[in-house]
Length: 156
Image (tube, rainbow, N blue to C red; front, side, top):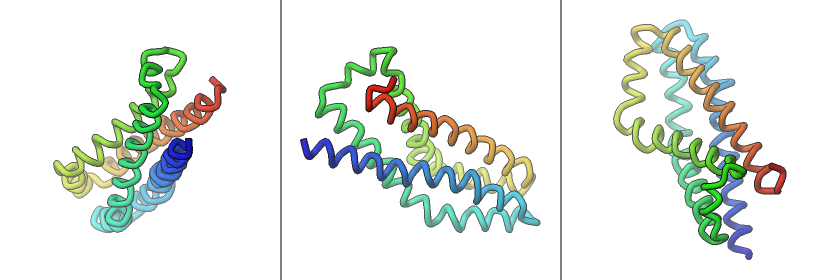
């Protein structure tokens, strides 16, 4: 029983760190970068935050995935993923997969470099698109977190 409590605590703390970081990037870092006078300044501001946060979020995303899988396995509830009434589980996993692909696959393949090249050509458009993508990710993540909390407590 205590292992499930520990897994849930790890899950929630890592999730708060990860999605809180997404909120910070979306509402503080990207708007600040967009206001920078030049693309070079904007990229430097964005990169300064990303260099510090990226390694942390890789750990948080990993912990969320491992703790979530552990809880589903320990409680023998994988079958719930087949039920429409547990749509919130599927949403949480979809959000996790999207971020995991970005952090563990696309970034190592050069997504950051390609974004920087795009920003050097058209700073306003590049940071506008990046901000919009982060806004969508934050909204969907917030829905997943809220639905996950409600669903885990029989509220859905």
